[in-house]
Image (cartoon, rainbow, N blue to C red; front, side, top):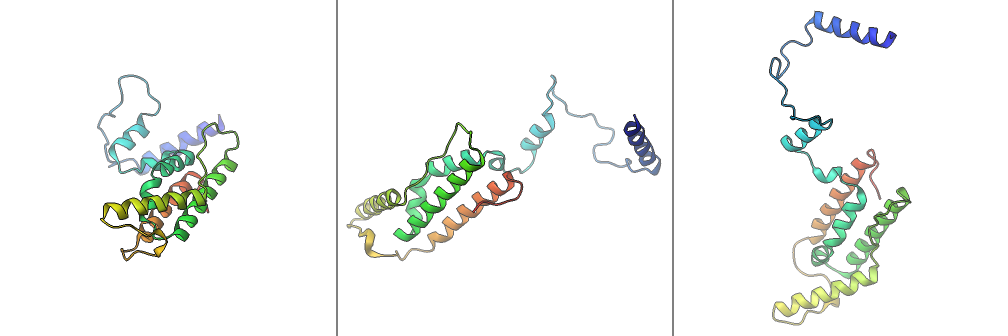
Length: 172
């Protein structure tokens, strides 16, 4: 009861000071749903504002999505060491998620660096054949502009998303 009286007193004082005058939407009806929906406000915010919906997803879903896009990621990596580094980083994030949620039913698959390199070589050979010549995947870096920058951007975005889900502590 004491807390309730304190809150009512604080509200009365704010009204007397005029703190609630000239608020946006003052005097306008709320756009409420026809049926009771306790989440009406968050649904409205998601529809009406620029909210990154991926930030609301669990890390395991984001990791599984990233794994589904593996082919595209491998296409932009320049050499085998970058592929290995990416596979090790991805697997570390998967294992970190598994450690954070040990009883989860949904798991993201790990990525073996050697399997990733083998698939990268296949992609390089396919692209070389499509370009009219045999590609030599071991020939070293290509002369294309910075795919590492694209990969770093993808990893940085994922880390920001996961960091916001983990209370600001960005994963490795």
